[in-house]
Amino acid sequence: MNKPVETGASQAPILTIGDTRPPPGVAPAAQRWGSDVIVDLLHRYGLPYAALNPGASYRGLHDSIVNYGQNYPYMMLCQHEETAVQIAHGYAKASGRPMVAILHNLVGLLHANMAVYYAYIDRAPVFIVGATGPMDETKRRPRIDWTHTANVQGQALRDYTKWDYQPTVVDGVPESFARAYGVMMTEPRGPIYMCYDAWLQEAPLEHEVPLPPAAAAAVPTPIAPDAAAMEQAMDMLVAAERPVIMAEFSGREHAAFDTLVELAETLGIAVFDINSRLNFPGCHPLNLSMVKDVFRDADLILCLDVRDWEKPTTELTSTTRELVSLVPDGARWIDIGFGDLELSSWAMDYQRLLHADLRIMGDTTVAIPQLTALARQRLARDPALGPRVRARTEQTAARHRAARAKWAAQAREHWDQVPMTTARLASEVWDVVRDEDWVLTAGTLNDWTRKLWDFDRPHRHPGKSLGTATQIGISLGVALAHRDAGRLVVDIQPDGDLMFDAGALWVAAKHRIPLLVVMYNNRAYYNDWEHQIRMAKQRGTALERAHIGMDMDDPEPDFAAMARSMGWYAEGPIEQGGDVAAALRRAIEKVKAGQPALVDTITQKR
Image: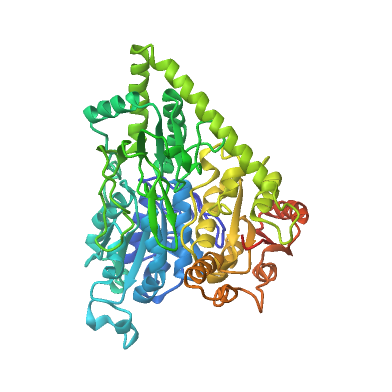
């Protein structure tokens, strides 16, 4: 049953699906209201947190959550709707469980649009609850309920959500809620949007509204791949001499991290991890992630839940946009995943079409163990296959060791320069956190963390960062997901990204989310600065003017002062690499005591 939650408590209890009873000690109201039904469903489906920015359009639901539901889901006040959605996004990535984000009417929805889009392309299950002014014109307040009401509010984000719906009567709330949950959690997962009429929420509930059956399955079973196609795939894998596995979203379920190791080891296949999720151990001898040369002599590429197959397998000349494939012409391709399911007609996140030799529709959490079982059968039947696998394993391991050794040597280059290099910063942070049960949230310091750290367990990293103005919010959600486990969650935080939403720092302090932020502060939007340098070289214009509109100087933001003003422990700015470790250790003491901490470190532009 539900655990009691004290008023103002910083953590929510965990409910199980099927539990709708209010917590002990809650005095039942004399009258029930329409929004109480929504709370019943939030309890029934075990959604523990709700990130929000306040709004009157859901004042009925707000009251029902606080009082009827005894602040379950636990409300997390945010300064911006983008932050609310991003926290739910990060929580879903790290935990595999959905979280609620509540958006005020049309205006809050429009504020949140970018964050919803990123949740969509990152396949994060976010249960977005919205509200609209009354559809009954006689119940609309003058002016504000008209300017904040849309005919079809879900239209604003329909191109990048899996489903949206606005029930017209309270009796339509349970079925649509259940459908939304199932759609959201069915692979490939993604955000949904449920819009609740303000008067539907606020009207007295005159009759009991039945909820979905407690024993009903909330989500369909996974899509299983075709058995004959899997045999064909194994024929191709066994025949190949230099196969490569490419993985992008297969690691969304932590069990797939280990099953992919079993598959790779069984056939001695090199793995290239695209890192939209952490798919494969970083220091495993078969890991050749970030070694693009592995594709130059590949004769077969097995794509496991991959959308972005093109970037890893090509070389780009950014200025001219010319692409050159690294893969030999005769190489064969196998694609196992969700194919063209859930394509948007608007967003082009589906990437370029892969004309694979064999395309198999299926969930890789099912397909990977099946491939391993088939591979073991082939090894048992074919005595010549084992020596080939062992030889290939040894060759790949040698390439892996060479790559790691090269990266370690490169990290020492320019070691004492001031400001420090990104490689030096990655090294200093690793030396301090390596003996902790650590999690890296989103930023990888231009992949230096992936090159130098040991990503040995699936929870170490939920996947690479997305666009600017997303990382701090997503990182808060990741930290929230790991809070009860007591892990040290580290966000290597770009400076430009934090400037988009500095108010997110307050959210962490307010809601007791322990997080270590290490600023990746090069005092510039340098990714775009580099593009201007390319343009200047291409066009013969002045290189010294490439910084205009890109630098973050005059004045330089004081991130440590900013963090302290919002309840964080903070130090910095630090330019000397040798000063980083001691500052990190002091900060980690604070994080372990429950306080978020920020260390502002200054790095070179590149």
